[in-house]
Image 1 (cartoon, rainbow, N blue to C red):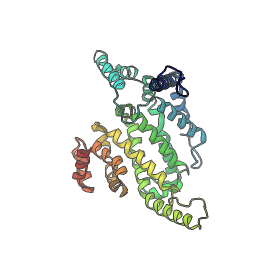
Image 2 (cartoon, helix red, strand yellow):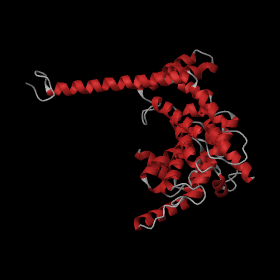
Image 3 (cartoon, rainbow, N blue to C red):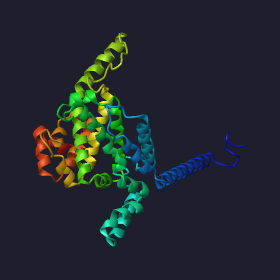
Image 4 (spheres, one colour):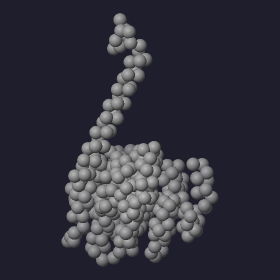
Length: 351
């Protein structure tokens, strides 16, 4: 008789290989079924329906209200759709995607310019999902957050950028978490290729919305960071000493009532999206310099110290600095005011 669990006459090594092969086939079949289901949902209008759901939040209100559970559930559904079709990190230009882009580029050359983006969408993987995202301005995600900021400004009667601390106190209590989810979704769309987000948000009004939103998030994180870190450290000290009362808000920032981890996640996602939005796009690089000082470009190199000392945070910030400064003399000059460009060059050489 053979070894336990292996039929007689079948080498154990062959049995293991057959088992691995069966698992690979099953995984491939599961991925294909999931991709087909996502395509069915998109073809049924799921992305358009989610965009309409998010637009419902953009209505005049008496007071600033928490983002409702239905909106949060919609964000989770969109995240599931993207997770099922978006390339894995580091595989944005995999063979399949590159082949789709190459074939679509050749086809686009022989078609009218107005149809070139449609050809690219349909001939690349997840084509219908990409097309739906383009047509709905990324499901209206930036406008969802902008509507919250506009309602906050109406309540405060001052621009949110004029006093980020006051705005943080007036924001919905779940704003930081929802904003993190939105930015994470925007970054997921950029993994199809940065041009997807760049094209979808290229209209003048959407670029103004995007600029306003990104500027405020950087200002919010900067104003809340120190108190969140200090209060979090104090709460941890009390917990270890057994004196923690676990009172609501313990270990959270003074105004936005967000933990340091929540602000860190939001800031990470925002910095990454700025890099993708500006990558090889002079118009969006110019956008970073809009408005009064401190501009979005001036805020970017002025992040908490952790983004210059921690290897994990350097890996978040420095690729974005390269993206916004590449081929753009004004942005390079603004970065040079805050830190040595040699640090950025060293990062590029090491990578």
